[in-house]
Amino acid sequence: MCRAVNCKSCNKTTWAGCGNHVDEVMRHIPKAERCSCDRNAPKSAAPKSAAPKASSGGWFSRLLGGK
Picture 1 (cartoon, rainbow, N blue to C red):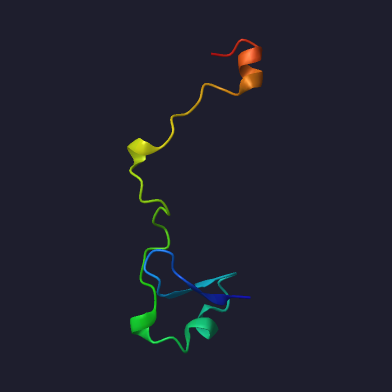
Picture 2 (cartoon, one colour):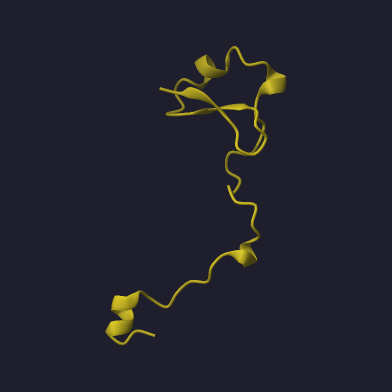
C-alpha cells in the first residue's frame, strides 16, 4: 500500500510504497504542493569525484595475496 511522505529534497508531498496506489494517495494533494523532483536522481548531492575509491579487496583477499 502506498502512503504520502515528504520529499527530503524539496519538502513537498510525494509517495512511498508499491506504486499501485499513487493516484489514491495523491488525489487530494494540490499540484502546487506535490514534489516534482526527479525520482531517478542520485540521492546524494556530493560530486562523483568525492565518492570513495574502489578497494583492491577485503582483508581475506589480502590474506591470500590479492593486491
